[in-house]
Image 1 (cartoon, helix red, strand yellow):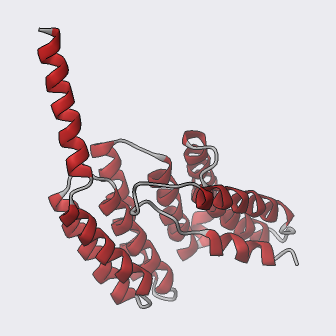
Image 2: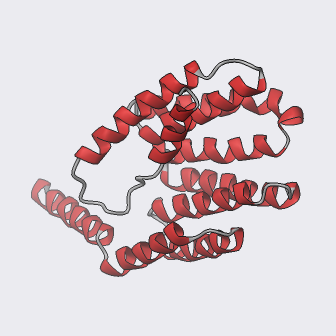
Length: 217
């Protein structure tokens, strides 16, 4: 009976591994990631988001399609500065996409950090009105991501951006933000030195940390 159970468990594990490296899924994701990297306009980011969303519908047990769907919508929101209604639509879709994914597949540092990024976008639409409500919540969200993965470079880089924005809003210096950005660059260096068998994992964010550091020059 024990042997039978072990064999069933092994078959289940092998099935999961096969699904995880399904060539059709990987090829579709890589195609969309290339499109994401080439996107420049809000419409292009939204088109990419739709592509990732379709992949998600066919791979409900994978969190990365939803992750990149939300990232594309968040990027579209930042491009739409000056059009607050459209910005909010994109940020709201991003937050909902992430939360639905967390509810379905569980949370991880990347999803939580990205949720904080989308919330930071929501805050940027109207900082005067939303700052009191969202500023602390955004920082707590990045803190939650770092609690799950203390050396996550994107969570740290995004926290640096948020800290810089808060410092500028209150007329303070950028030193604290730059310290956080410097730490994130160390984490990016570690990430780059690590080998991974999953080419689809997030690797973005280093340029943002470097931009924050320039404010200290």
